[in-house]
Image (tube, rainbow, N blue to C red; front, side, top):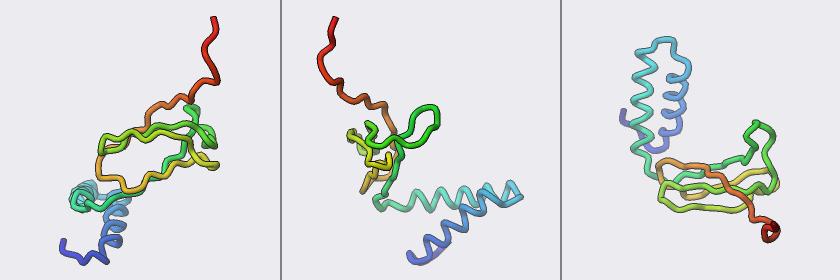
Length: 111
């Protein structure tokens, strides 16, 4: 599929619709492969927004502690913003993992 860079978002949206909504499994499978090839060819840095929420599926936690393992191996730790969101900029392609982050205790343990 030869397209200009300006048409890439339109093609991607069309392929995503095809994967999700086409009644023919064969057609949806072909769209899925074309979408994978398009995503793999895109090497531009990505932006990711993560909302820190409790395990019970509740609302995002404002200023909640987080640890994100980036695809480049760096571990980014900190606290979410007032909405419970974390924004990661300039991520290379790859797997991003959300790790458990435990905030520092308020003092030494007493026995």
